[in-house]
Image (cartoon, rainbow, N blue to C red; front, side, top):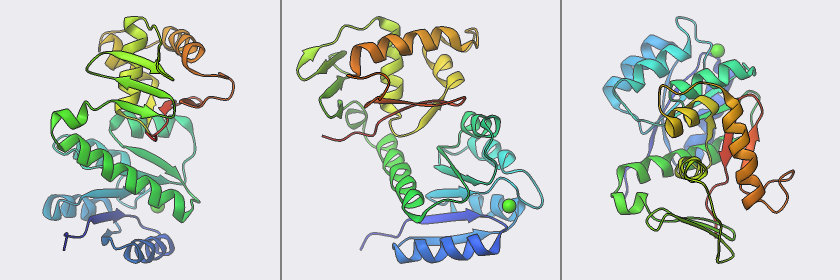
Length: 235
Ligand code: CA
């Protein structure tokens, strides 16, 4: 029997704690809970969970502090569950290293889907490099990292080197919203001008090349004020 996936939930609202704990038990996850940030950080160190669910408004500290501290030494997936809906909070949490941001109130299906995707990502990142470089496939689109080609329905799509780098970064993080500054950092380097204009121009060009209808995209979605998300792989 495979060991159960161990999820740590840091949250001070009892109702949500109870609801999520029941939900996760019902789906065969092991759940540990903490109601303060201090307790949460101690548990992260002692039990090394497979995934962390994190509220931001905790009684003794801000959840953003926890993300920052955990990311100094761990890649453990972090899903933020927060009542804060403003873009600034989302961008900050994602830039600090959270994998997903779910706003309250949320549905069971959404939470379970995010948990599954995060666990899949972390297994892939920890497995061999050829798995990491297997082509990204979504519908008719195939991005082959080894051949450095993009095809749609078997036809090569010509990309500039920058467009290719943006697509690779989004595809390797598919399903996750990547913030504007994380994309800029990855593609143009840490000293690049943190100005979204050039990124937006490139995204427009990429969409013109890959989307049938750029106004109703199939592959790359915009989260306004936060960043871009590439569709999860499916054949
Ligand atoms: Ca709270």
